[in-house]
Amino acid sequence: MAEDDDDLILSDLPDEELVPQMHDDLYDGLKDEVVEGVEILLERGWTPYRVLTEALVAGMTIVGNDFRDGILFVPEVLLAANAMKAGMGILKPLLVETGAPKLGKMVIGTVKGDIHDIGKNLVSMMMEGAGFEVVDLGINTDVDEYLGALEKERPDILGMSALLTTTMPYMKVVIDTLTEKGLRDDYIVLVGGAPLNEEFGRAIGADAYCRDAAVAVETAKAFVARKHNQAAAG
Ligand code: B12
Image (tube, rainbow, N blue to C red):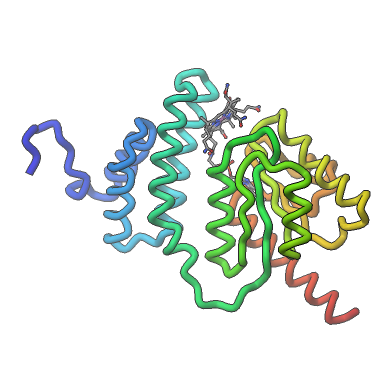
């Protein structure tokens, strides 16, 4: 029992109060509380995907807005990001649990100069959950690392993530290098990250821009099916 009346017992809260409380806890970087909230929602029968989107991603959006508006600063956002990652850690095995045959393979990384990895990790998790094999190159990935991994892993898809307007042009460096080496058409190139849009994706020669992890999964499935159909026809 709580010794103090101010102590909040998360499990006593109904869903409609627990979720906003989790947004607050995420905002305050309270990792243990976020983890506890995730566990409670799962016990109450929420699907991992619903917990991810409604409790974690929605909470991170609030953090993002206040960071943008100068209300939060890097240290606080880092704490929030760590709390988010801890929550995602619980969901990951549940999201990737699938006995389905592999739909295809993806190599993914955050581009050079950029250390944001929450969105990339989310895409990796959702892709694995949908039945793709994912090779994650991590953050700050340069063109040689991408090329080396493509050669070694021979994936169907190359995924690149960038969260900064200063790092997103690096995606074009990678795509141009693939083109120069005559390798561009060997891969489906998907790009994502908050500052990107469809127009940017087209302009740099990607196959598609995906605004979130769910769209990434749908897009990947559609492109891989098309690739297999072409291979069968050819
Ligand atoms: C968390 C965060 C941080 C954390 C990162 C922790 C981590 N491990 O990732 C820390 C505190 C370290 C950080 C640092 C910095 N940050 Co920051 N950060 C954020 C913040 C608040 C949230 C990003 C996030 O995780 N979102 C949640 C995830 C789920 O969303 P997402 O990343 O967009 O991903 C989804 C989609 O975009 C898509 N997607 C993403 N990648 C991919 C890839 C593929 C292949 C596909 C298909 C889809 C896809 O699917 C994802 C899941 O749905 C954003 C604000 C924002 N609105 O984005 C700023 C933001 C990105 N940061 C910003 C800045 C300026 C910085 C710093 C330069 C600050 C500083 N002065 O030091 C540094 C940069 C360091 C560096 N070199 O990278 C700016 C960028 C502005 C700009 N125009 O470039 C933003 C927009 C905040 C702002 N409005 O000012 N940051």
